[in-house]
Every structure is written in structure tokens, then in C-alpha cells.
Image 1 (cartoon, rainbow, N blue to C red):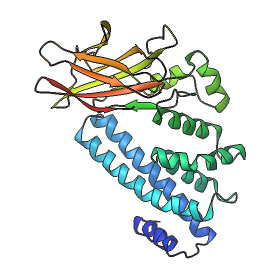
Image 2 (tube, helix red, strand yellow):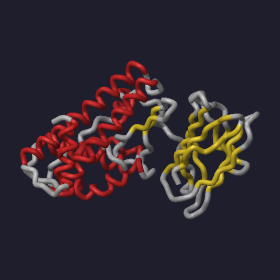
Image 3 (cartoon, rainbow, N blue to C red):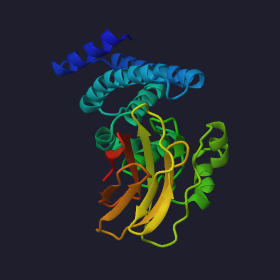
Image 4 (cartoon, one colour):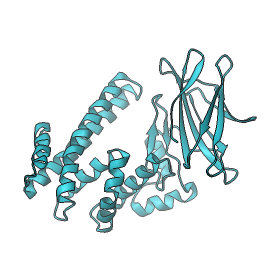
Length: 291
């Protein structure tokens, strides 16, 4: 089923027409094929050219466009027909992966559907583990199974923080995933061992800093009051613990010799915070902070 047919299916839905079962299955299977194909292409590009290359950026744009097409069609089907038990396994995989690669709002909307499918043995435990972890990572909560790996614009690959690092392999074994170290080695994950918390109020801060040329900025020190938490490395990233009481604001500062200091408040209740700063004209400016 080509892209035009996918759009036509959405148009048919909008007109409140009926689709036959085989048409629905064909659509869902096609969504699975295109979802996997565009990701395979992006993966190959990253291996050849790297995550920071223009080639990979173009592959990402293509992937985003394909995801949007798939979501428009598949969500139309789900909203009108739901998840039918007699769909083929490939069709069910199509539903799963399209939801898995959607935005957080869509994932939350369809999470009950995937919960039910898992309990009915209609998706694999491994797939469900990936979904649960992705929901956690997108909400900046610690993941359970360690399936989610993040990549920033500087090409740094790092494991989304874990809820229980000591017992993660036991959980992974239950859902059919290999040991976490195997995933780290095979995935060439650069960062995965985060600083341990010293008290209950500690919260992990993941700091990324780059310049106008999208190059990492190193040796930027991160402070909480008069306490030095750490500094960015040669890859423009650092992982530090700040102390933040519940419902309170964590005020942190960024300093580097000739740069103007930046003071920034961290609010909200998250398991970890991603802080992205742009360094230009000897000034730091916040690009995004997840509070």
C-alpha cells in the first residue's frame, strides 16, 4: 500500500465510510513495513556518516514525515475500529510500532489499548517493556528495563536513567531482553554509569552545551550555590546530581572563564532533568529544560 493509499484511507475514515477487514489489515501491515524501513535506512546512514551528519539529519526528516503519515492512518483505524483480536501479527506490530514512535500525548491516549493487548498476549513482553520504558523516558521518569537510549544533537549516546540499576537484568530476563551490558556494548552507548545519589533529595541533571557551529563546549562548571557539581567534558555533556527538595526550586549556575554566568531555576517533580544550553557571543542561553 503506497503513501497515496494511506492518505485515501484517512479520507475514507473522515467521510465515515466503512473499511473491510482485509483493507484494515493491509493498511496496518503497510504501516509496519514503512515504519521499519525508514528506521533501517536511518540506522545505516548513522553508521556510515554519524549522528551529526547532514545525511543523518535528512534521514531523520524522512522518518518524521513517514511517522506522521502512518499515525494519521493508523490512529484513524484505532479510533473507529479499535484493536481487533483477529488482526494478523504483522498488523498488530504495525499498531504497536506506530504508537511507539508517536508523541507523548498519543502514547498516553493509546496506553490503555496497549496494556490490554499485552494482558491478552497480543503483543510480546519485550514490546511492552519498550513501550513502558519510552513512556517513562518521555516524562523524565526513570525507566524500568533499560531499553531506551538517547542521542543528543552533539552525537552523544546515553542510556535513559534506570529506576533500579542493580536489578535491571532480572527484569530484562523476564521480558526476554539480554543483559544490559550486552546492549551497551552492541549499541556503542557512550554513557550509562551515572553518579550515585548520596541522599534522597538528589536529582540527576543531564547537561548539554554547544556553540554556533554545533560543537561541544567543554569545561563549563555547574554550580548549586557555592557547591561545584561538575563540569562538561570534551563532548559538551555532563551528568551531575543536584539537591532538590519536593515542591522546591533548584537554582543552578553555569560558569566558564570568559563567558557570562547563567543562573537557571529547575522546577517540577521529575526523576531527572535534561538541560540544553547554547553558547554564543560569550553568553549562555537555555534552549530547553524539561520542567
